[in-house]
Length: 454
Ligand code: UD1
Ligand code: MG
Image 1 (cartoon, helix red, strand yellow):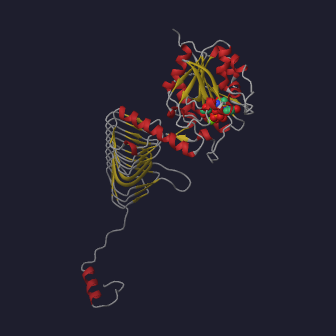
Image 2 (image 1 turned 30 degrees about the horizontal axis):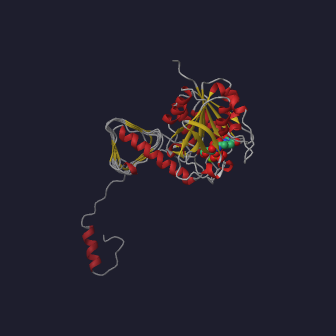
Image 3 (image 1 turned 90 degrees about the vertical axis):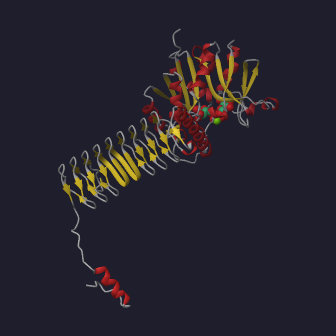
């Protein structure tokens, strides 16, 4: 059987938002990824190769993000907010391309899973003209109710149009639905706006489908799948649901976590085999951790690659572009940014390594700083293989430390250091024999401390 084609129409126009933010609602993030990106990814995962995004008049930021995330997204503008059916019709040119299935999704409902969308598509494949996603919320107030007869869906009644009897129904409309592509335009064109809100309700697609002799069905899912986001509190709840899913998936994939409820993941975090994560670790976007690596407590990673068997933390910070090779050790209070740390190199305590390369086997002493910024530009530090950087050294970039070179502790290095040599930059040590003893004698005589006891 040839595969059915699918067009996803994602509605993002007319946000009644209480986010209290200058940022468009669907650009807020959960799991380090904008809400809109989650919805587009779910649509693609469910096999919708064609995506239409319907936006309101003020939409430059949304269109830009959509284009960057999924190059095949086509953006349509709904100039007036006349209802969900009217919004879907804004994507008419896309509908006319004739996909087998049309999935209508909301950009502010980011937790819907691929499996759930597939169930809606399966219902169409079995012959339904409309398949609606239903759920039974703890509090149904405000939702459209699903009126069913046996396994058929008869109508969706918006709360403000419902009778007292209909409002007692617990099964509600989640808003998402699938329409048979060949009938979609016909269905949508028949929808009127004679209702309490004077809007073109997409939900009326159910009644019009039945008028045309098409079957409508409801597919029930859990509340978490269909949580819509209008407030910062709902954003935080959605984040919690997503974190639970991401942690469960990581554990299922074999990651060891002693306190998974304290670990924060991003939607794109990737783990190899036998990875261990201690409590209170945060993974921002773009992190990959290879086989056998361990991330110790209270570390923060984003945009970083951790090689096989590497050890990070406790209390380490890996910023974007940190690229750790196999068996690298990055210890407590070490920050790494835009730096390749090659196999077996170590920076175990209190260091900043930015815009650098650290060669294989090199040792970075405690308190080492790569001075990469001159106030205007960033410069690179290149540290050779097996080099030894003594504690409390400043490496003023641009600077190159040769393979196997040695930097004496406390040096401020401003010139390149040849391979296998020693660079020392500090004043010579002075010794004054007996000085401390004489000081104590002077003090014991009750005298004030002289400038120097001679
Ligand atoms: C809708 C459903 C309701 C369901 C609820 C679930 C309709 C008529 N009602 O109600 O049955 O229980 O969702 O949350 O569909 N939008 C546009 N253009 C418009 C209107 C809406 O793009 O002209 C978009 C919104 O941005 C949003 C979505 O459609 O993403 C839903 O609109 P909203 O106003 O939230 O509908 P509800 O009244 O919540
Ligand atoms: Mg709503």
